[in-house]
Amino acid sequence: MKKMEKISTWLWPEVCPFCGKASSQGICIICRRRLESLKITGPRCMQCGKPVRHSEQEFCYDCMRVRHSYDRGLSMWLHQDPVNKSIYQFKYHNQRRYGIHYAKELVRAYGHTIRKWNPDLILPIPLHKKRRKKRGYNQAAIISRELGELLHIPVDEKSLVRRVYTDPQKTLGRQERKENLKHVFAVKKEFYPVRVVLLVDDIYTTGNTIDAVTEVLKKKGVEKVYFLTISIGQGY
Ligand SMILES: [Zn+2]
Ligand SMILES: [Zn+2]
Picture (tube, helix red, strand yellow):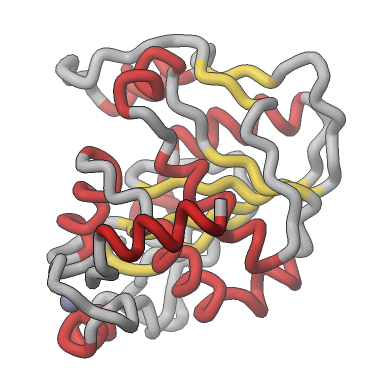
């Protein structure tokens, strides 16, 4: 594995995951500066971690209306340029190496909080096997592996399964989407429930996916479910 990595570095020199230009230190100085403004530094929602306008505001607009099943979560950046473009490359153009940089940034920003959460296990949000086969990899699993290595937390890529293949072309309403997700996820019989789980995905939008997985896990006896994602939408 290590050797393979060396060879690939030699064949494909390190590029900045945000602008695609050659950069020996990963994220280049220009992009790092741009990313600073997409970090959530001010007050944030106690539930999903989205930025909120005032520090006395406990929850964002979405979380005030929706009762989430998960306990809490954090995302690295707002889903805007260049983060959205970078994730697109990571997901659809085989830029798997970007996952290393995302994980490093997550640990640098939230390592302390993650240790406080004290997860027993990291679980990536699964893709349906048909989609994973087509793409060749699950982007959430790549970030999970990197996080697991950096934080010394075991990663389980097998126990969670997405049973239903959802057509990306099909546009559904909010409620319909939520209903649709109800039976999408399942946990394998062999899964031994741990106390705390950390779910990992690339983007947080409505939280419906995280909720659906959380419900399945909590039914199995998991007590706390947290999440980490690379990006998140604006909260207001
Ligand atoms: Zn750059
Ligand atoms: Zn929220």
